[in-house]
Length: 474
Image (tube, rainbow, N blue to C red; front, side, top):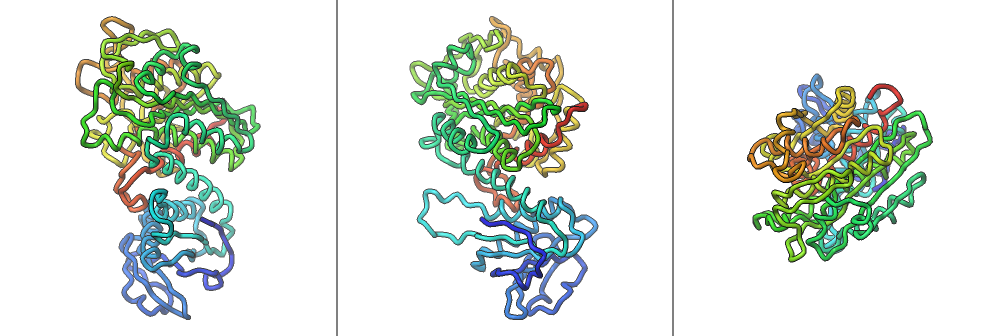
């Protein structure tokens, strides 16, 4: 999709439809056939006509409460109506003074709603948006360009997560990193095969991979934007391309959703791609552990003890608590790479869905200033997080009977917190944050996602966070 800004009047733009926002209790401000039916309630749409052109009037809600999230919702509903009308070129007419945050949100709402995953459908089965133009008397080109680049990365992350596991194997995910992300300026990609993972001493990660015929891959990405004063940021993503639970087999009813278990890895890959495309002056290391978790004669068994990269011994109480085993070794590797700040992204626990549903990711952090940075990035990006506690009493629940740690507490409670405390052990004293995106990673009932498929959650947040990291505190 082409996305651009122009200072030309919307009527001079080659578009199939022009979008006008209408605030609650306010008039449209021009004579339009059908415009009298416009309502200002958020997301309500009306098609109108004037001067031989088609307009879409979309409600923006009360002016006093209008912000970035409302802009995303309004833009998504305008795009929905445009698609119903068969419009492939869309132009938003913006008044003077619309700030970059709202401009970015309009781009996001449109692009996210216009997204389609149709790789396995007949070509041309549905009309797709080809061009989005934002017409403003002000120069909004920088906000439009940056929002479009990040949102395109988010939609690519959705493509990765929506791809079925028979195609997106661990090797295929690593191949994507090499071929797509690795071609960008400033990015280096290194891939290790399963034998190398074992030889490196990553016993926790390698244990998960044992049950699958598909060889695991460790992907390490390095992006250097040239500013040596910035601390090295480590982004760690869970890349379980299919999770059947291992011998602790999952219930079959929703097992098909387990292709989404690599959504954290997709977010990390595409956030680094977006940073490179924006030529952001940051330093980032990305670590992705890619594997399947399947039952077989060679699979890890409940009761087994494995040794992680940092030498920690781990008792396996539940083979379906595999993501934390992968992340444990990936966090240790990021520390060895010299990362001075860490954040991991993972579809880690069903418990976080019970606690927070689909609209907030579970957020844990071991450092106050770093927590403030992550929270601020979440607010700016519109990807909401809710901080949950870390506490030595929860950490104690992850002590093993026969090893230093267990991967799953025997007490069936506080699973998002105990999972985070397990990871906390491997983050050590490095400022670290953990995002549990099991609820926000797919099938989220927001207007701009239409409630179906992967969301690409984390791409916008990670980009915002990386760009905000500097040499000062946090």
